[in-house]
Length: 346
Image (tube, rainbow, N blue to C red; front, side, top):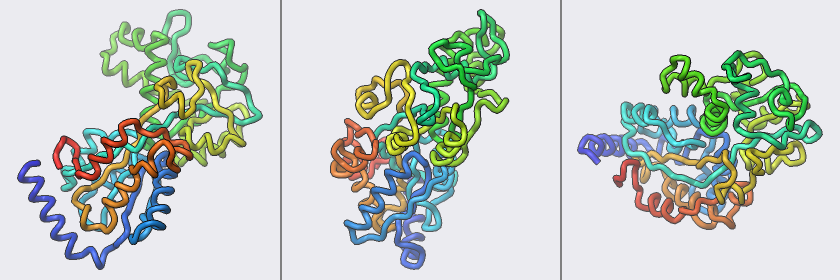
């Protein structure tokens, strides 16, 4: 760590230590709606098993949680940000500009992004990334040419899919799920169908073509959901032909209402995600403000408890809820115990 970082942290710790007793004694967590149920389970168990207050866990999305996290050091700011994606460079920069220079990244395990529909609705059992792109992109390949998307039904471009109207409820842009959806589904489909190559052949730069590949149509067939998965579920309940994008754990806890689609012939399960077979999976994280350790009571203890074998291991309650245990969990435990910050320092 640099002298500037040490000085900033030292000043922050001194100021915080003088006001902690009057400020708060609960760990404050905000961020990803995907990580929310796991963090809530851990917070409740932590409050029951330790002599610290139960942490306060809020949702709002990965981007919103990291924005709050990066607003500054001090008891008026959150201690932990949950995220269903890794922190971005621009967020690290925003953190640093506000004095949040020492950040501990904690990977808690893995989750899959699944496509699910109403239990009594059409059966979507033959999805590929190309199908999702062909359904939702504003421009697609038809007879070798890149054209405005003419498709209104899934069977228009894949006879193995139902002849039902295209309607998809996808995560809004503030959710970490959206980024993984874009990169591992939409972008992959754009490349596989030849649309990206066609864009570049028409004169687009590679960067511009990559950006264009992530766009979705705006004619009402692709609908952003800014709330959590319960809002997506309500939308599916009201639209019998629709599909929605969910985290695996949410789907597994709503199998009485939803049926899941395969992706590239693979059904999403904890086993197929753990073995790397299911193509749309992602790591889940939380980020700790190191300057708050030792100042906010129970912060480090909460983090260590979260990634313990008893909680995040393959036989723990998080796995029972749908989290795919990290095969490198012991390394994460050591990093948390040693307070190892991003960039290799401690």
